[in-house]
Image (tube, rainbow over all chains, first blue to last red; front, side, top):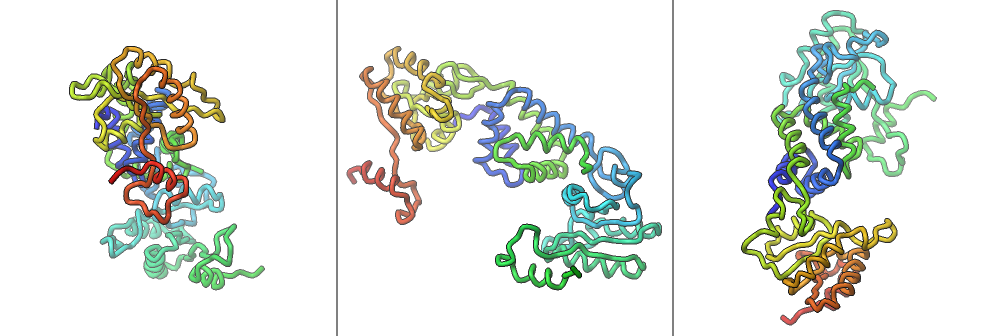
Length: 198
Length: 198
C-alpha cells in the first residue's frame, strides 16, 4: 500500500469522526485533493476557529462565542421560561422551529444508568441554582422521547415540583407528515393520550 | 436561529463534502466541539498539508508527494505491465489486494458522453506516449465494471491493439463471499463466460 503520508494523515483524521468509516474517509480525502486549495484552507481554519472561539455559556451551558450566550442575553426573549434539553444540537433544532422564545438549559446528556451516567453527571445542580433565583415561571422538559429521556424528565419533574414552578413536557405524538398506519403502538397511544380539543 | 458564527462556518464547510448533508455536518461539528483541541488542530493541519505536499505523478498521474511517484520509481516492481484505472482511489484499493506488482496509469475518469466526458478529457494521449517508448508488454484494463467503464475499456482495446501489446481485462464475476442466489443475471453471465479450468 503506497498512499502518500499526507493523504493517509487526512484519512486517519476523518476516520475519527462519528459515522465516518475507512471507505468514506478515503472518499472525502480524495474529494479534498480534487477540490480547490481555498476550500481546504477554509475548512482547516474553520475547524481551528471552532475550538478557539467557542466556549460554554455559564448560565445555560450552550455553546457560544460570547458569555453569557446570545440567547441568555437577548432582549426580546421570555426570561420566565426555561426549556430543558440534553444537548446543544437540540437547541439548534428547536431554534429552527421558531416556536419558542424563552431560555434554555443544557443538561449535557440524560440519566443512563447502563452507561454509568447518573444525575450527578448532568447540570442539574446548576439548574436548581437558576430556579432558586425566583424569576422562572415555567419549566419545559424537552429531553428526548426515549427511555432515558423520559426517565430524566420524570426525575426532574419530581425534583422541581416542590418549588411550585409550572412544569410541562413537549408533546409526543405522530410526527407531521407521518402515516398513521405505519406508526408504532407507543407513539399512537401517546398521540391518543395527548389529544387536544379541536 | 442563533448558532455561533464559528460553529456555523464549520457546518457550512462540512456540508460541501460529498455525501455529507446538513444534519451530518451538524453532528460532525458538535462532535469536534466535544473532541480535544489537539484533534481539531491535527485535522486542520492534515487538511492543509494534503494540498501543500501532494502533487500529480507526471508519469502515471497518481497522487504523490514525490515525482515520479513511489510506484513508478520503485525498484522491485514489474515495469513491463501497466494497469489502467479511472481514479487514484482505485490504485489505493488495488494496492491493498497485494495481487499486482506492475505500474499504473490513471485516466482521470471514464468516457461518459452523457456527462460530456470524451476520450480527449482523459489521459489517453499520455498513455499512448508511455506505450510508444516500447518497454510495455501487458496492458491490464481495470476500469470499473459499469457501462461507462466497459465502453472505456473497449475504446482503449481498439486504440492499443494495433501496437501489438498484450491487452487483458480484470475478471468480472461473483464477488468473494457473495451468494449465487442473490447475484444479478449480468454478473452471473460474466461469471460463466469467465470460468477457468479447476
